[in-house]
Length: 148
Image 1 (cartoon, rainbow, N blue to C red):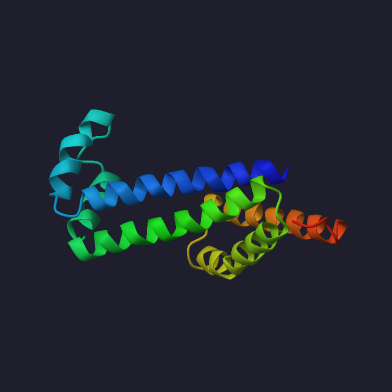
Image 2 (cartoon, rainbow, N blue to C red):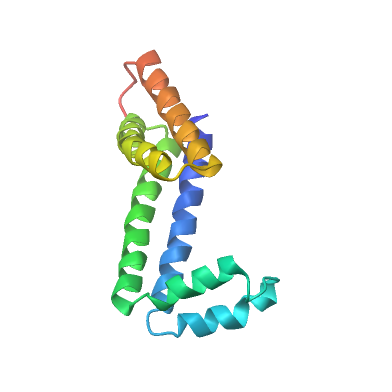
């Protein structure tokens, strides 16, 4: 089970690295132009209200904000890589790090659900609570481990 959680953390790190690289490549790009060009190619109508909303939000992005998104993505990717590699190696410190980091996000997730509830947010909260619960159980079940 720990290795499954490790793979999940590593997958999130990979996704965040891709987001960071993409953000940095878009710093001095006409994002609205890119979206208007690519949206029809993937099958969305440019007149769709959701696509229109995304394009309007993209028009507000400044190069500084795009750099911040890229930097934040890399920072979180580093954290998820650390958790994932530590969990894969079955290190106790990685279990504790994952417990602390994941449970520290629970209040934010609850706040988001209270503000704008949707199924995806509830599912993420349930998964994170289950993950924390499992790791706490695992740490308490094996209180002493041979030298790590």
